[in-house]
Image (cartoon, rainbow, N blue to C red; front, side, top):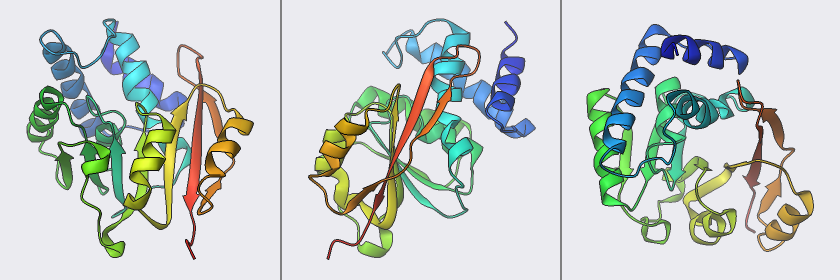
Length: 218
């Protein structure tokens, strides 16, 4: 398998482009993920192409859906090996990104990759969501993403991390409208936006992004 071609063709299928630097950074990141995964459990996937598609390319899908402006304050809850937050940071280096991950071995990996790639304005918070320090309103997050955690957990423990006008973004296989409306009924401040439905490159597995906008609490 040609790793470089898989990245380039995959991003093209998503309607995205990679710079030579971004391609190099993703390849180094992938190499380190595979190397570290032999000692600590960063992913259950073992096939290299599957890792590229189901972790790296999947993490890039929000870029096909959202316009992420320079300087946005973003947070990835339950980041694990850095998906999607670290990939989004590589593809949009102008973002401010915080990766929240309580498992210390995964935290060590995240610090290692951030240092190796010399990424700026990306931070690792080694705690659970309910222990994350609540920011001042002006420092709250514009965008909070999560692939690994249940939406119920994210909203019940992390709603106060997002600013008014900010958004939550969740990754799911399919969109269950009734389930989501029932969930956000508990949070009048949230507005369910139209979901973004697509497929993973190469595999054609369904992928849906669900966006919730944070309105005025008053």
